[in-house]
Image 1 (spheres, one colour):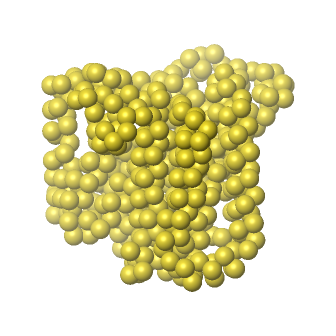
Image 2: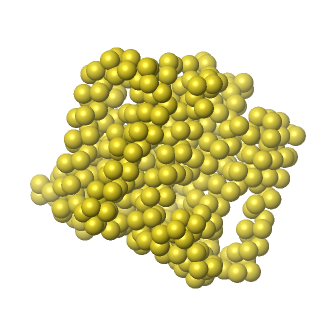
Image 3: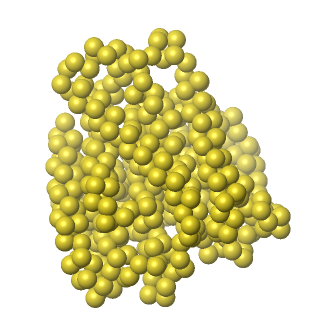
Length: 431
């Protein structure tokens, strides 16, 4: 349980520091206004690189969880010319290991995987800063970046856990300058995003493709770009790995029961028949995610016809992945890391104190819960009387709070699609 205590102490300390920043926000913004974009790089060094050096170099810890179980073996297999799914088990997309391989060629160590994820996150922060909330002053926008870097969940998931989730947002951002006039290139980029991340990226591709139907010429070239990278990948998998093996390993991940999600929250109230209906929870959750996502698409299509990809992207992205975190039985609180960066830059009003305090609290709980749940033996409570012990009651209460947070942010994202104005274009200083 030592790692749980460490994560809890770090998360609470960061949360208190952020509350202090919010209390002095005006003074901090004024100081940031007189600085430059280098502040973001300084925060990356202070809140990513230095913790990395202390944790993995000075103290000598080794990455655990997904880094050791999945990322490192997949990356090393790719570095050695292996074929995913055939030569190494992978619940990620075909090219996932191949973009890790160049990093591992420099240092064949699990710690290099964490460093690669930190670099990916740094790029995502800079691009998000470049494209969003550009109507604010430089100081206000830099405050968003500083706030994000100090949030407990991104720090814990990036540095201590080496999670890859933010790469989905990075690929979504890379398509922004192409979606206006270069649909074929945009299709290539998003297609590569599908191949280089994980299967859930398709939950973003579907609504983007549906919204592109408003322009027949655009959707034709956009689809051509997707197929240009998609067809060779399918043929490669068919001849080298076998499509059934690819589908099986991707689908099998959804069979694992994790927490918190609607399955874990409702488990004490379910009958034995409902608990054993694994496919119902698995495919039913996916169907509900798709249906809610389509509601968001319809809202954009019917009332926000002038919105560009850049304008609707963060809200549709947050909506899709927060709903997925609610209804997929294999969802865990790590998934909040998927959308934390766009949430901070596009849905956070720092003048709403309780919203910010709630966001900090959500981050603290989401940063701690995965390690706590795993070290308690990944409990699923089959009856209410199982919650009478203090530890079980505490863990289940944390699940409820995180689950409520996911619902709240999903509702906020859906409501954000009613905004009367789109996101402003970036100013030159944002480069």
